[in-house]
Image (spheres, rainbow, N blue to C red):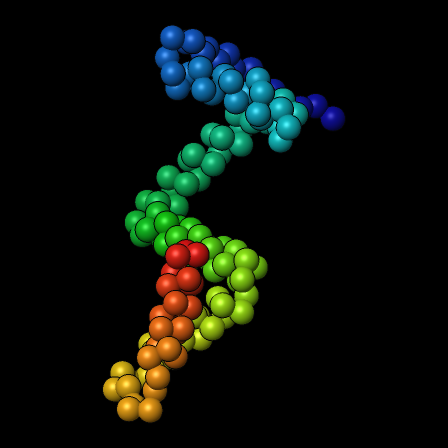
Length: 130
């Protein structure tokens, strides 16, 4: 079984920051993921050009990726908040969700100021956790 091999020489100019960064990656951090320079370079070149093709076919790809990343950060923040103080966070979240789903209702005369203060504190604790 014969393999076709194409040899390419790469030159890294250590006076250029981007070249130094690429070389440092190949020498250090990339060793854990890639077993050789060749595998790392092939992955990088393919990723670069496949991404350009996808962007040409879908100009909103980057926007959706940024939105997805932003939503993941929100979800992670909420998860951390729930782990920190689940009861207070759940109370604040329930209060916020209830307020967004219903039309605002004027406070009844029977509602105590202490109850309102507690709800506000829960909501602020939740927001601070974000």
